[in-house]
Structure formats: C-alpha cells, structure tokens
Length: 210
Ligand SMILES: Nc1ncnc2c1ncn2[C@@H]1O[C@H](COP(=O)(O)OP(=O)(O)OP(=O)(O)O)[C@@H](O)[C@H]1O
Ligand SMILES: [Mg+2]
Image (cartoon, rainbow, N blue to C red; front, side, top):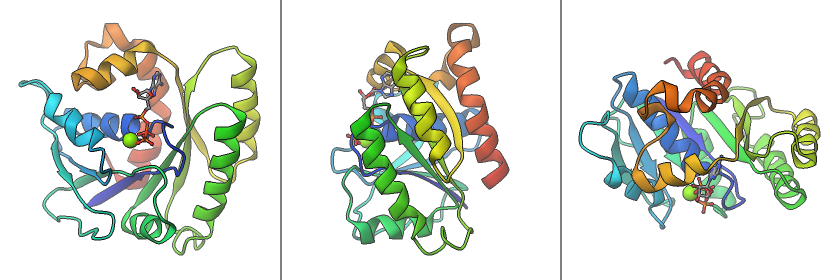
C-alpha cells in the first residue's frame, strides 16, 4: 500500500485540490485509488460524489482524525488533511504516509504560516530521520508577478524540495464544482496545466511508484 498525505495547517492552500488531482491521476492509470477525507467539511468526499459516471473510479472514505485506521483494501491511498489539525493527530498522519505534500499559497501570511508548519513537520519522527519524503507545491501562482518572485524566494529557502508551481486558474474552481481534474479532460484543453503537474507526478512516482 502506498500512502500520500496532503497537509498544511493553513486553510485554503490547495490540499483538497492536490488530493483530488492525485486520486484522479492514479485512477486514470487504472489503480482505483482510495481518497481518505479527514476533514469534517467532507470536501473531497463530496467531490467524489459529484464525479460523473464514466470517469475513472475513485473510492472515498471519511475518517476521524482521532481514529486513523487506514483500510488495507487499496494499493494507492491519498489522504486529504483538514486545516488546523492538532499536532499529535498530524504526526499520526505523517507517520502513516510514504510521501507528504504541502501546498503553499503565495503571500506573506501564508508563507510565514507554512514556514512554521514545515519547521514542525521537520521535527516529526520519520521525517527527521529522512525516511519520509516531504515536498512543497506552490499553488495559485499568478505568473510574472511580484507575488510569484516572493514565493520563489520562499521556496528556495525551504529545506524540502518544491516539486511544482500550479497557476491560479478558474479551471480549478470549476473542476472542484464538477468533480473533475486536469487528468479527466482532453489533453488539448488542459495542456498547460498538465505540464505544471509533471514534476510533482515524477516526484510521487519516484517515491511511491506509479
Ligand atoms: N490553482 C488554483 N487556481 C484557482 N483556484 C484554486 C487553485 N487551487 C485551489 N483553488 C481553489 O481555492 C479554494 C481552496 O482550495 P482547496 O479547497 O483545495 O484548499 P484546502 O487547503 O483543501 O482548504 P481547507 O483548508 O479549507 O481544507 C477552492 O475553492 C479551490 O477550488
Ligand atoms: Mg480541504
């Protein structure tokens, strides 16, 4: 079983977006992944409900953060973690994962909060000993802006690799509404977005197998 957790204490950074995208990508490869929603808001579980018949199948389950018993039924498990989770529960999730992705939004408040969060993650057993790969994903990037340059400087200073920068795009808002991802649409419509996901997917495949 391969487990990938998408975490950040900061709300709205793109955890559910990255989690649903990775699930859809594994589904596209024929792996029938399990998307584990730890968020009481059930955003990713609801997103799975909105997926139309005919799209590659994603199974979903809502679990309590205090009782993280991962089912062993699926070879690929993606965990969507809520914002503001307690440190101990977060450490349990990190210990259950083979790879950890941390989406970060541009902006001084998000970057500062994410820096503190990453420093805490670095101290977790298993991460400290280098057994669990952690990577950062810049999200909602407005290309060519001062905000992007700031984010680049932030990402350069982070101890973990930055494996992708995803542009800010209306696409992600409508994809969330419609239960789809860039991996569900004709390549011609989403070519640029797909390019942005490539280095992240390579990192995942090297870490956990694809
Ligand atoms: N690259 C992007 N471009 C535009 N909108 C985006 C992008 N990524 C995410 N969004 C939108 O931003 C909002 C927050 O994203 P998302 O729900 O993935 O964050 P989250 O970290 O899961 O939030 P929460 O902490 O509340 O669980 C959503 O409406 C989502 O559709
Ligand atoms: Mg979420």
